[in-house]
Image (cartoon, rainbow, N blue to C red):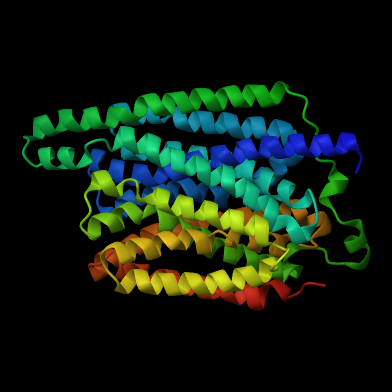
Length: 420
């Protein structure tokens, strides 16, 4: 690769890094929104987790259409379109806050997720192909650092605004008349207008900037492996079982990771912590994810293969979930926090194992994997429902065990099935 190509790759990676920062900030803000909207819109626990459902469901419905949109617009213009859609979604938070209509908040979140689906469909395979497949986990981990650093900022910034003095507000609401309560809740709802207006403006500015900058598209031939295509006569994705099994692994991984950071505030309250303190607990997961990504960058593949790392850390995740369920106090918080570290290898390892040797099916295969992100829409409300039935936020985490067992199966056997 010549010097010009090296500069082009570095520039493209920088742009992707900025996008992953945006992914993280928007996605991790949902953890704060769940607790915030539970108060502002007077929701029960299961209803509050529809925040995650609305956001991540967009990935399922829009991943395949996104692959066709990118084929039509090209990579660069597709990024602009995705950012514009996200700006529209964040702008919907303004009328949603003014009216306190939960459905309008969910519409905004689904719209944001739609834009993110377009961006993710382009960004993840792009990072994977810019170098050897054996070191793909390293490059994805670098993107993960951008993502999780932004997520930590989102929790601190949005939490300090939306959930400021949340315990005092909850106590005060119990003493107010219906008319006074409406006034108080309207004031609480209005807190998100300014931050989401700022986010919408930033997204719009980025969409315009990327549209006008000179950024080369990824040539079509770089999305294929001609050597593989010569010896592989398969004609549809169904003939790549390791890809289909990988999409299911992504489904379970995203589901458990979203449960990890989106339910951490609720777990803290269940353990007796005040909301003003528990609102920052998801940042602990973010810090552990950052540590994990640094580990991936240093260790994979120099000291350990991405497959062996996936096996080891999936086993660790199962142990940590069991400890979270059956311990108490700070021990529970530490165990649940450490899940961030053990989860950190999963996306970077599953993605390249699932997308390897797809050749001409790389783009549509990537879209299928992005569809697996819908696990973040399905599993958190399921967790909330089980927790309510069991009467324990901790015992509800039992649903994470079979998810990790499937990921372990994929790491051991599933990624080999049908691979030539």
